[in-house]
Image 1 (tube, rainbow, N blue to C red):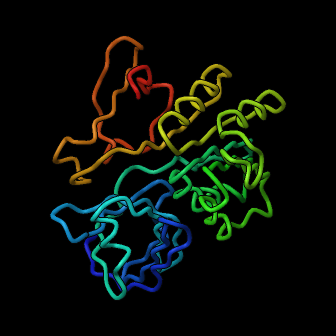
Image 2: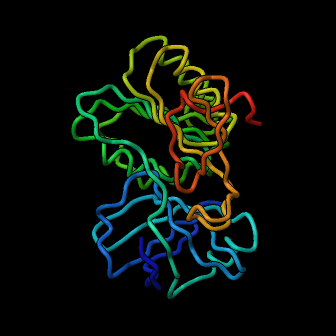
Length: 256
């Protein structure tokens, strides 16, 4: 983990409230795992946890949404930004010759570009990408989807099929067998994906979104309920134990 003032190469609005922030660092970024995140300094006291979108040598890209004063401040930056990371465990991508389904929705799309790159050479990938509308999926223009099976879905049908990621995943699972599912997105979406995975006995990794104050296992504000015996609930931290969890251990009954 390192702390650095990084040069901003790009901080571009690509949709109504969504931005790509690309920064250059003295550090080498190639060791970063898909699903890890950085804490970015904002104008307020607390940093903001932002998922890594893509990395290349001394460059790292973040895909973020302006939702409050902190991210609004980030969207105004032009020269430097202070970043802390990489943090979290990231996805397990040490697999070969597997049939993989990736289901992502909303801002859960953020880590998927790097995840695909980590998996593409040795695995067969199907990607289900969901959003509210076409504008919400403008980020797809930055994806290389030539060697994957892509299914786009939107709530309003403005691009792709008019349905949600859970419905499309269920449809695909009925026709094909998969070894692993990776999912990231709104809680209600991931709960649906996890239930599909568990009912079909498919290994599933879920990257959870939680509010974080510190990002380094100090404030205890990003609790995640897990159970290893389906009876006793244990609290884990999304920032350090996660944000990626083996879905079979998540206590999703209590998720909203």
